[in-house]
Structure formats: C-alpha cells, structure tokens
Length: 68
Image (cartoon, rainbow, N blue to C red):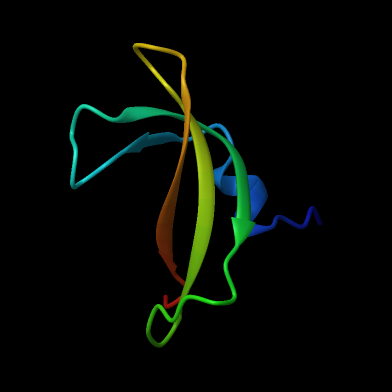
C-alpha cells in the first residue's frame, strides 16, 4: 500500500486566494506550520505557488481538515 503525506497531496494542486481572487496558481511547495493554531481536526500548511499570470511565486497559509 502506498503512503501519502498531506504535503505531497497539496503539491501540483490549484490554489486561489479567497482574499484576493486575482492571486491563483499551482502549488509547488508545502510544509506544515506548527506555529499556527487551526482548530480541532485540522492542520495549517504554508504553501508556495506560482502565479498563473505573472509566474511570480507567493506564499500562503492553507488549512486542511483531518476529519472524515
């Protein structure tokens, strides 16, 4: 059985900012943020994505739910 990490599942996925809809792209790096409280059954991740229009790279924090 193949084992996956949340980081590996985030890489390659599309990202769109909820606060700035013009910021969107594909996630190329993800790492767990231990210094951010994200509630019960959830974890925060710092993700870097390449902007679809400019190609510039930006960082964002996303929260992943761990509940079923």
